[in-house]
Amino acid sequence: MEALPPAPPPWIEIYQRKHLDGDTALTTFQGLLIDEMLVPRGALESSDPAALTDATIAFVNSMQEEALLLPGEFAQEALWSFFALDYVSQAAKGGHVQYFQNRGANDLALKLASFGLKSMIADPHLALFNQFMKLKRLEPKEARKAAAKAGFGSVEAAIRDFDRQLGELEQSEPLKARHKIWLKSLRKVRVVPDEEWRASIARIAQSNPLNASRRAERERVRAERIAADPASLAVRSLCEMAGLRPTGLRVEGMIPMREAWPEGPKASALCVQVTTDFGPRSALFFAAGGMFKTYRAVLIEPGQALPVADLTLSRQAYSAIVTATRAD
Image (tube, rainbow, N blue to C red; front, side, top):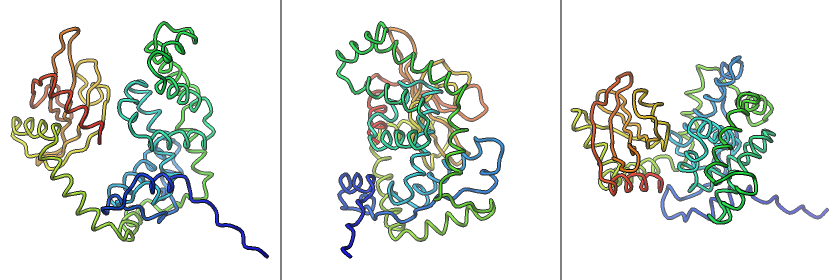
């Protein structure tokens, strides 16, 4: 019998080989290495769907931060889950505009979110996601025409209605509940006892042939970025004002200010999570005021009403910080 031709590679492998040049460990795509999702038994059996949501997010974070695997080197279903939940979480809390500020330049994240919603058969969520993306991808003039045709006075009004629809949808058909049903149906899910989950993640990390070289490269890149990155420099200044020594930072993107600082203005802020020698802090960068805006950066200690440090920024400095973090 004539041999069948080999199956085509997964789309994510094609995408990664096209976009990664292989010049360094962090840009060398190894192909699929781990084709399973590890889920703690307690999360799977919990009556609260959020427990399983948190577990799958923790798995993806561990694959990327601890195992140092690239998207496509571990089960892409885990990424479908992560980015579908990411879309709903961000857009439901801060609106579709905030979601696009954080993810609009990340084509891979947008594709994965779409695939996740489609795989979960979350048709109303997917329809809303696609409508929003279609509107954002149109030229401004065409977007205004599309909004007017749909009965809205502006593109902004149409997007506010997307926010309203998502809020209602999450009340009637929350994605977390659908996500749990979907995840329990996947053959790639491997359930492990709660006490074994951490050790299983560590074994995966040790099995990555490029783990050590990627870790070294990542630390070198981080050191170079900290030396020149405007957000890192501002965080360092805030920490110096508060008498703290920063030991690490992670950009979270744009969030509703009051998520991190309940007493702060009702506005969006760029959030950078900072680890220091005295525990975690949140650095928030935001614009305040009406026509004549002021630009500020504050350092927030969890549970404290007032910032532990406060900086006034120029408009140019604020723009440089926001632009640099979006480029990441």
